[in-house]
Image (tube, rainbow, N blue to C red; front, side, top):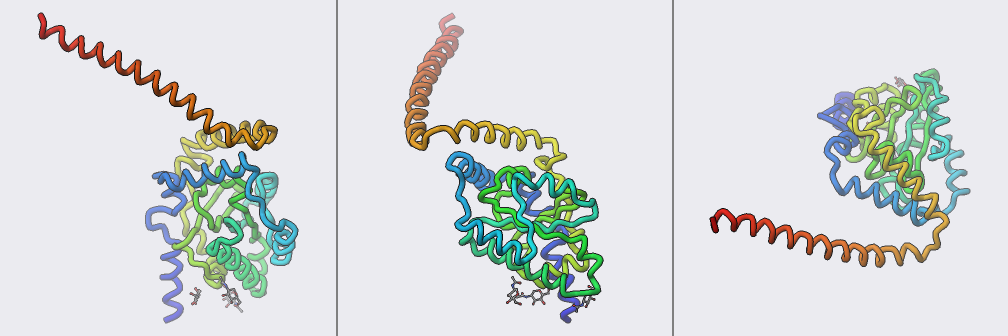
Length: 268
Ligand SMILES: *[C@@H]1O[C@H](CO)[C@@H](O)[C@H](O)[C@H]1NC(C)=O
Ligand SMILES: *[C@@H]1O[C@H](CO)[C@@H](O)[C@H](O)[C@H]1NC(C)=O
Ligand SMILES: *[C@@H]1O[C@H](CO)[C@@H](O)[C@H](O)[C@H]1NC(C)=O
């Protein structure tokens, strides 16, 4: 009974019933998701981000559970220097108080210790690495992977080139289940991400342009005094109103001209 349930459970979590949440987000970008990214980038770039409360405590808990902290600065080096058959299991989490993020982190560390405790899996476990990424602070990688709502578990292979995403509710926060997914390689059932916003997709340039634009902005905003972010909306609103007024007057005269044009045939 129990044995027959597992594949069913894993299938609801992983089997491709069309696409992953990630691909849904990429192919039919729902506005709330995209604006969540934009909002996060705005928070991080403009306001200096919501820094984790205690970096030292976080580094300590990462180390104790054998997790590698993935950041915007180190991810390229870490993934590109991995063997193609290395599997990185990256938990992407939101702010510290987020219940679901917390559950995913626990899921990940439970799965990791279950794997390490099974000697028969030693060869396999040697190729499985665990990483953690903070969606709130590391916005470049979070944007490049088009992640709209943490948490996620991302399965990274091929030295960072192949990505598979799992998210709630399809992947429940259950350490035993993630352990089985890794031990039995069920994660391969997930379709690799190949949507149009993915790194090889036809719209990937949009994502890159967005990142560059924000990085460019960040260089200047770092130097700008804080009050400018209060003054700027007032200023842009005022300028916007001028432009709107101008456009409207233009629109009116264009409309009048069209009306005049319409009158002509009648008067002839
Ligand atoms: C270790 O993993 C193997 C292969 O998945 C499994 O058959 C075995 O039951 C596991 N052993 C323990 C103690 O969980
Ligand atoms: C992790 O393991 C602990 C101890 O076995 C258990 O109480 C907890 O429910 C597990 N959590 C998850 C998310 O698997
Ligand atoms: C977690 O998953 C395992 C195996 O897939 C299952 O036996 C167990 O009941 C699940 N735990 C919870 C709390 O759902």
